[in-house]
Image (cartoon, rainbow, N blue to C red; front, side):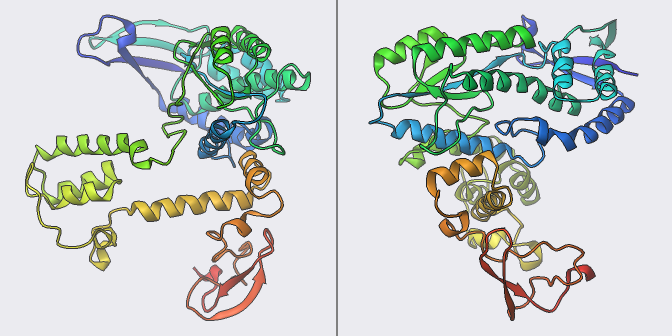
Length: 442
C-alpha cells in the first residue's frame, strides 16, 4: 500500500549530477487518506506540544507572525547603539532537512511529549513502511526502502518535522535555564526570543561557542546538517568589528550588514522603501515582458492578471490597456474602476491597497483574539506595555461584536440605524451593532 514512485525532473538543460534533478514522488490514494486521517487527529494537540516560536502549520499560529517577530528584533538590533552588550541574529540553512531525519529520534520525541504508544506505533508504521522505485526513461527501477528521512510533500511529514524541530527548542530552553546563554530581547520587559532557524542572542564569544555546541548536538541527534556556508549572521550597531570577526569565525558563518529575506519577505525596510521593493517591481516587469510578446487577447490578459500578477497596479494597468508589445494604449478608466466587481462594471481585479488593509486587520484581530501569543507579547512589551492594542490602533475596533453563538439574537451588519451600544468582551470598548437581519436566518 505504501509504495511510492519517483520521477526525476530536470532543473537545468544538461544535468551532470543528481543535485541537478528534482525528485517528484507519487503515492497512491489510500496512503493519502490514511495520512490525512492521522493528521486531522494530530492537529488538535499541536498547539499544546509545539513551542510558540514555531508558527508554521500550527493551528492558531500564523506563519506571518515569525516574519513580524524577525522584523521587530532586527529593527531593535539596528537601533541598538548605546547599550554595552551587542546582539546577533543568526539565520540558519538546513541541508536536506527532510531527508536526514532520524526516525528513532522522532519516536523518542513523541514519547517524551506524552503521545500514547498506540498513536506512536501508527505514525511510525506510516513512516517506516514506505518503499520507493525510480522511473527512468519510462521504465520502473528496483524497489528500495529508506532507513531515514521523511517524505516531502506529505501532509503528515510537515507536522512530524515540527516535532523534530522541537528538539532544538528544548536544547535552547535548557541552556537558557542553566544560564549558559542569553537571548536577545525586543525591549527590556519582553520575553526572550528564539525563532524558526533564526536565532537571536547576545553577541559574545562564550555564547557563540555554546550555540555552536547546541547545533552540533542537534545535528547528531536528528541527523540534520546545518549549512554554515550559506548561513549568515547579523549584528547590532553597537557590536565592535573585532567581536564580529571573532564570533563569525567561531560560528563558521559569514556576517552581513544587510540581512536577506526570511520566508520570502524582506526582513528590513528602511526609509528608501522604493529601493527595498524594487526587486518585486522588476520581477513583475519581467513576467509582463514575456507575456507581451505573445499578444494575448483581453480575456487572456484578464486571466494572467488574476492568476499571476495581482500586484503593482500601475504596471498591471499598462499591460491591460496596451495594444501590443511596446505599444501603450489609452487608460480609459481609473484602476479603482477595474478593481470593481463585474456586476458593477469592473473587471474584478484585486486591489492591492484593500488587500493590504485586510491583512493588517487580520493581524490586528489575531492580536486581540490571542493576547498571549508570542507576537502579541512582544508588541505589547515594546509599544504599548501600559495599554492595549485598540487604544494604539483603531483599525479593528470598527464593527467588532460579541461572539455570534447560535445567531438567534445576533443581528447582521445591515443598515445604518444604531440599535444599542455594547462593550466588546475582549477589549472593553463600546461598539456599534446594526439592526434588521438576524444571523440565524442566513
